[in-house]
Structure formats: C-alpha cells, structure tokens
Length: 400
Figure 1 (cartoon, rainbow, N blue to C red):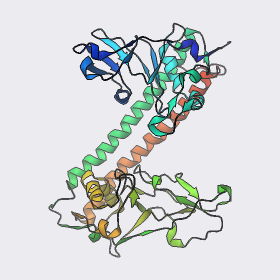
Figure 2 (cartoon, rainbow, N blue to C red):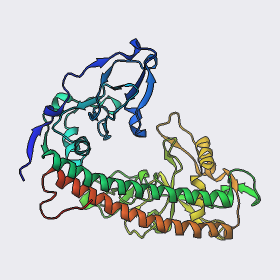
Figure 3 (cartoon, rainbow, N blue to C red):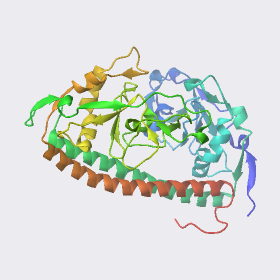
Figure 4 (cartoon, rainbow, N blue to C red):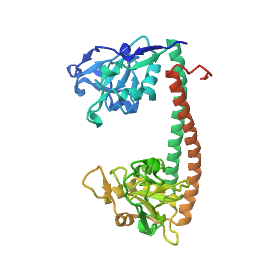
C-alpha cells in the first residue's frame, strides 16, 4: 500500500478565529487550557474569569501544545452542547477532513514525531521554550487513507488502554501496601502502643561514598557512581549512574550492595530524604557523598523493609523537610544528627518483620505487573513506529 506523505501545514487550522471571553462576562465557556490537560477534562469557566483572548475550536480539532514541548500534550476537542468551546493560544490547532482525530493524536505524541518536533523549538529554557508553528508546519508525516488511519488508531488505543489498566493496578498495589502499614502502625511520628523514641533507636548511623567528577569517556570506566535520581522514585534505578574516573580505586565501603537501604541526604524540598532498597546484586555501583547507606545496630532493632516504608510516610517526610537546611527549594541538605534525632514509634522487630513479609508479597505481585507493563510499553512503541512508517500490516496483523 502506498502511503501519502504530506507536510503538517496542510492539516493546520490556519488563521483561526479568536475571542475575548471577558467581553462576555456571564457566559460559560468550555476551555481547553494547558493546565487542564493533566486532568483530561477541559475547564468550565465564565468569561469574567478568563484573562486573555482565546482561540475558538471545533469538535474533532486536534491540539498540540507548543509550550514546554518536551512534555507531550495532544488533545482531541470534544463536542460541547451547552457552551462555546475555546482553547489557549499555546495550542497548535489541526483541523481537516483528511485525518482521523485519534490517528493524528497518536502521531503527534509518537517518538519519531517528537524528535522532529523538538527541532522546531526556540527559547532560553524551561517554561520559555516553545515550538514554532511555522517550522512545525514543514514536518512531513505519513497520512494513509482514512480507513487505514482508523485501524491504526484502534490498535494503538487498545494497547494504550491495557497500559492504563496495568498502571492503575500498580497504583492500587502501592495503596494496599500503605493501607497495611497504616493499619498496623498508624502515624509513626506520634506516641503509640509501641513506645516512642528516635530514629537513632532503630538506626546506628549512615555511611556515604565520595563525590567524584564523571569520566570524560564513560566507555573506559570500570565503576559507576550512583546519582541521587537512582532513589528519588522510591524504586532503586541502577541505570541512574555515571562513569567513575578510570583510575579510581574505591574502598569496599563505597560499593552499593544488594539489600542496602539508601537515603538521599540532599535534594529539593519535595525529594530530600527519599529512600530505596537495592533489590539485586551489583558489582560496580558506587555511592556518592549525597547518598547514604543505613547502618544497623549490632543487635538489629529494625527491618530495612519497614524502615523504607516508615521514611516514605507523609508525616515522616514532613519531619525530614523541617529538619533540613538550605536557603532555597532548589537544594536542601540534612545532617545525620538531624535524621537520627527525628522522633518516631518503636514497634518490635517481630512486628516490623510481619509487615515486611506482607509488603514483600505485595511487592512481588507489583513486579509481575511492572514486567507486564514493560512488555506492553515495548509493544506500543513497536506498533507505533511501524504504524507511522507504513509497515504495520506488512508481515503480520494485529487483532484488536
């Protein structure tokens, strides 16, 4: 099948009509704003509350965000029966009978298109970065017949729905772990039946690695130095690391080992104090100075799995933030003395281990879901790439 190639400018709305909602102060509008995109639901606002002129959009228009373009945002305008529909001027509007809206939306957030899209960007960085519509209009894309576009969109929608269900299942498992913790221990920053003390009653101390410049040629590096981003998600990510200088010989105490619980002693206000368990063996990963390893008492007073969850509790994270120092939110630090002095409940080790066993079972199920999600992500990327280069149905069909 021959796939037509066109420039995106052929699908753009061109000189789109605009409106100043403030001139209609009591009229209710359906507003497709950039902030509303994350919720998936456009705003409903009266004209007096809308501060600037907007574009008038129509059902089945496809919107592409030109602001902060590294975040992929594309939206299909839905029909509104009760109000006029408008959109922020930060959207590029596509309107044509030549495309099936779900097909174009998938194309506009695809990996291949996004790489080309980022080449149209201008600005000094951050929120000032914008894609330039005149450059975007020159990007060439594949546009098969409408029936074929519908088949492709249906296949991608099907996989996307499966990915969403898998992500939701993972979220529910995380909520279950939190529910079990709260059911067993309650608020660990307040006095309870377990007795009350300080983190130092559970943790002996912390030890760290060394701050080193990354290697100029990482291919020559025998060892890798963990970044603080390796723990900020709460799941250990060994790939978040940099090459150590090739002549560096680290002491044994600087290696991250399976079973270590790591702590970020420096980060933003939101992320400082993040922890993660090293869940698999590694022979070449080193601790930096900004990641600490928990060191336990000779007679264990704590289970690492329990402590990991204790440190992730909102009330405990508030205590970490309150004890951190730094003049701005961009980077905070906390000392060992401050961490060890934070008040907390002291449940028996046996009870901690009981929680850890339950949490491990939930974690094992979560890992199964994560592995399945990874396979779905790979399938989606493969189907997406083949769909937009015209080879999706060449050697096999996908039934949806």
